Structures are given as structure tokens and as C-alpha cells.
Image 1 (cartoon, one colour):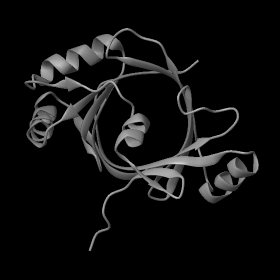
Image 2 (image 1 turned 135 degrees about the vertical axis):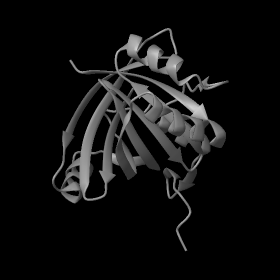
Image 3 (image 1 turned 180 degrees about the vertical axis):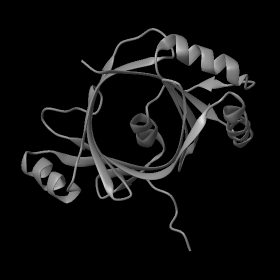
Image 4 (image 1 turned 120 degrees about the vertical axis):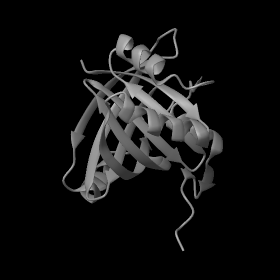
Length: 183
């Protein structure tokens, strides 16, 4: 079974700038920036507290993901993760709703992705803050964290859905965390 292993950090604007400056020095390659709209669905078979069924839209692409948390005792999270590309997100929305799933949570994210060998580092901006995630094997995560040498780097134990529940706004029964529209 595919298992996602990652550690999330809450960043200040200064720490984000330090991370962005340090990554190329460590040999990281920037793979680009994306804007995401993530919709999480709830229903009889999926409770947001135990598992997540997410439709992620990235420009003209979409991914459907199922994640289920595996218990760990450290700041490094492990989750079962199954993900597939979706050619027609509107059709999958219809199918999910026809099967009894309904949108429960929506959050937007600006993501910058970096890679060092088999370790992925993402720098994320959400409406409620700045974050970094390091994904890979546990030893690789710890190694990158040490090599970044960013002072006062705070681990963030909550997932983006939980943070959205905490900081989002209820819009017609759906908890949302969206950026202000560009003028």
C-alpha cells in the first residue's frame, strides 16, 4: 500500500524567504509553482476525522485522492494515500454527489515545489498562513531539516483540512479558506 511520509512546518515570512534562499544552495531544483483548489468530500463511508476524499484542481488538471492517517508518535506523519488523475473533474463531482458524497471543506493553496533526489519540499501559502512540507523517507526528512538550518522551525501537527476547519468560514454549510479575489 502506498504510504505518504511527511513533516509539516509553520513558517513566518522571513523563514519562507530563508527556505527559498537555502534550497538552491542545497542542490534543490525548483519544479514550479501551482495554484490549487482542494475540495474534500464527506459521506457515509468517509468521515473527515478518519479519512479524506479530496478532489484537487490544479490549472487544467485534477487529482482524486483518498488518504487515511496511520498513527505515529512523532511530528512526521504517515498516511495511506491513493491518488489518480481525473480527466473530467465536473463528471467526478457529479459521480461523487450521486454516490452520496457532498463537499464539506474547500481550501485554496499556492504551492512551490522543490526536489532534492527522492525528497520533495513544498512551500505553501494558504489564506491562513505559510507552511513547508518535506516528504520522503524519515531519515531524508530529518536530513533536509538539519541541512536547511532554519532557526525556530516549528512543526505543524495539523493537516490542511484541520487547519481549514479551525480558520475557515462557513459558506452555505461548506467550510472554506479562500484567498481574497484579485482586483
